[in-house]
Length: 409
Ligand code: ASP
Ligand code: MG
Image (cartoon, rainbow, N blue to C red; front, side):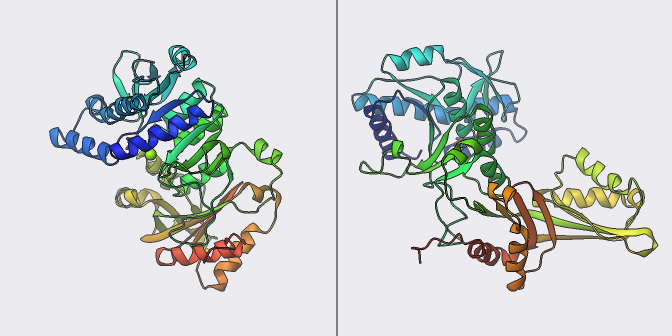
C-alpha cells in the first residue's frame, strides 16, 4: 500500500467484493517504503539490534495501515474492524524477524465476519507463545494472507500486487511476454527460486500445503476494472485443478533469469572417494547454498575439475573458506566468476514431453551463447551463461518455445 490515495483504492476494491456477496477478510501490508524506513531506524538505534525489539518496530507499519483501512471502510459506510496479530491471535514460533506461523485462532474472526463486519488484519506480524510480537521476514504479508485464508477456509486468496499477474517472463526484458491465466504451485515455487519475485516463496509453499487457491492481481485498478471474481489476474492452482481445466497444454510455463549467482572452479581435484565431500562439507557448515554442480570428466593422473555456483553474496566467503582448505581438498587452482547468470525454463508440461532440453540448447547454440553448466529438476532446466547475454538468452528462448504473444509489438 502507498499513501491515503492507495488506501482509498483498496477500500473500494474491498467494498466491491462485499457488494458482490462475499464475506471479506483483508490482510494489509505497510505503506510503500515504510518497512525499509523502520528497519533503518533499528539500525541507527543499534547496529547489533535485538531481533525481538526489531519486530516491535517493523510490525508497526502494518498496524497503521490496518487501522487506516478500517477507518476508510467505515467512511464508505461499511462495517469494519482491525484485528492485530496478538488479538486473534496469529501464533508463531520465536524466530524473531523470520518467524513461522503455527496456528491462527479464527473463531472471533469468523463470528465478526458472519455479522457483516469486514475484518482487517495487519500482515507480516504474529505473536509468540509468551506474547512477544514477531514478524515473518520481508514480504511476509503474502504469507499472512495465505495463512488467514487457510484458517477461515476462504474460497480464494486474492493478492493485490504492483504487477497484474504472473508473466511468462519479465515483461521489461521481453515485450511479447504473456500474462498467464494459470500457474501451478510447483511452477510458481520453481520460478520464485530462480529469481521471479512476485510473491514471498513461503506463501506459495503454504498455499500448496493448505490447498489455498491464490490469485495474483494488480492493486492499480479503478472502479470499472474487471471484478476479481472474473479472474483478471493469474490463478495459482494445483496440478489436478489445472488438468481439470483442459487447457491447451503448453510445454513451458515461464522463463526466469537470476544474476545473483557466482561460479567457482576448482582445478585438478583428486578423483577419489570423499574428494567432493571435502569441498562441500565446509560450505554447508558455513550455510552457503551450493546450487549447480559439475564434476568434469576425469583428466589423466586421477584428477578432475569441479565447477559449482553459490549466491553472489557468498562468493567471497566461499572463496576464503576454500582457500583455507586447499591442502585438505588438494586442488590446484581456484577460479571464480561473478559475472554469470542462470537462465531457467519451468513447466509441468516437461514431465510428459521429450525434447525440452534439446530445444533450449539448440536455440542458444544458434545465437552463439555458451552454456557453462546445466542443472535440472522434474519441471525445470537451468543453464549458466555469461551475464552479458542474459537478456538475449531470455528473448531467444521465449521465441524458441513459441511463447511470444501474437498481438504485442
Ligand atoms: N511490510 C513488509 C515488508 O515490506 C511485509 C510485506 O509488505 O509483505 O517486507
Ligand atoms: Mg509484498
